[in-house]
Image (cartoon, rainbow, N blue to C red):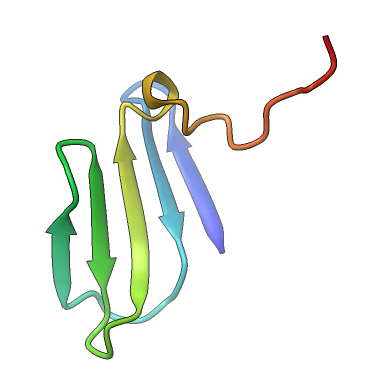
Length: 63
């Protein structure tokens, strides 16, 4: 798995596979899932990632 985060646009992309994307589905206004021909998930795009609590992926638990 590979992740990229665009701080300017607040977009997080989770790459799960190198397969060719054949179908894209919007789960809601900020979450989009791309699928390969075999039905496996290729990537997940999250808009407003930090506002939604999806970024950073690991939060520092020490206070």
